[in-house]
Image 1 (tube, rainbow, N blue to C red):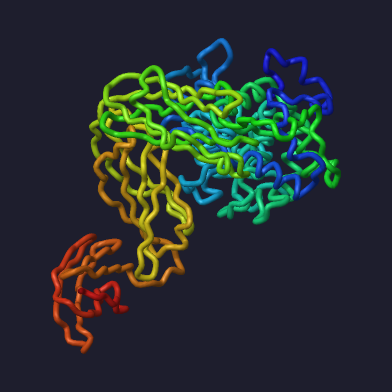
Image 2 (image 1 turned 90 degrees about the vertical axis):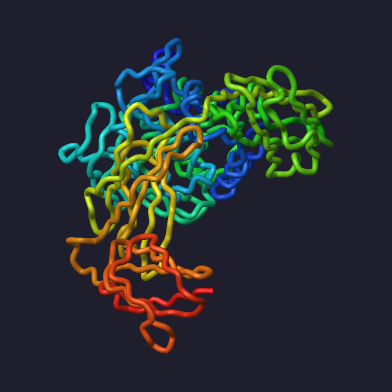
Length: 551
């Protein structure tokens, strides 16, 4: 980032001037990269950064952003997506933005990338919505569909986009920031299978596609590492216990994808710790584990990553302050676990018994020293939430549509959870999709006969009642010829209909072909009592028999 005040002069320096700067990475942190090149080097970086302490929860992100993404000496949010002045601690008008789109790995919340601060940033809502899951790129400005003066969305210039309809182009002063973020992501998560391959390939090296390498290396060179990035990297390290090495050592990218590809890498200024000396690598000095806000009567469990070298065992103790509100799962970590390459994950539970803010410490003592991690949490009353109202889908296309809903006014929520049900050839497939706003673009519609969705609002991991169900059909789209989806499930003594829309003329036959039951109209989740047996079921819209077994 070139215009950061305290580094404004640094923007004029040559790229090489940053090659020996190691920020605040501890001595020996990058020693495992010595002498490696290309694929072996990238995998060594992957192994170094892939294990880290996950933040407490998705809803707690704004509290972490207050440490990583506000201007120095100010409470204004540092938003790389707009220039609208918004101030912490209020998060109104902002979203938690996965700069590397979560849909690219399938959106699973169980993947650590979902809450990895190294690519999560606060973003103004409209810019976040316009960005969608488009790849980075240079917009053909004559065709831009979104331009707020900071970032742009529209068709990419020739040779860019990887087949996507649009690309997202950040402002010049942030292009290097995004490039180094993407370098981190394709290295830390090189083991993932990608659902969308706009900028990536299904391999561990080089992972980035050729056009993406060309673009990101260009941005990386033209927009050198800034003090803003270095400060943020240090704060994330305190929280998660891992770093973005492409910020600490910008030249690393050249060895993987640029002018030094094929050469052996030697981190500048690395001091290798003496072999055999006991060391606590993680958690790091100054680290805090924030559990965010938790409703009274509920609990939240987070995990601290413990990594040691040459340590026999590490004692674990919680003391001082509100120590009764926090519980560690073990009082001792055996060195055989924490010395291993994958380290050890120590669960710590926050289970408040009273309203208010609570603070304590967990202390790790490995014999040659000790280190404390601050624990923070806040207990609030259990929220009372009202059901949302799901509304008709919009922008229905062969392969996607936008789910919509309205939320009760005046209620504080953390996010929405959209439950999507796909109907495919008589089967149903359900998935949960988190959303920031009162709409969500859903892709892969062409893989379904039809779909349905309902919505819940979420606050402090408390869910509102379910909204009404909205069905989405391929109406108006030519070339779709299929029975209306009909799913029937057999249970003990009854069958349940799970149809995408009300259907008429339901006939139930036994295995001899005799009609044993006629139902004039069936609807979603209708239960019909039936004796044990095997049946075939048809409707006016679904002439192909569906087999069901009642026990």
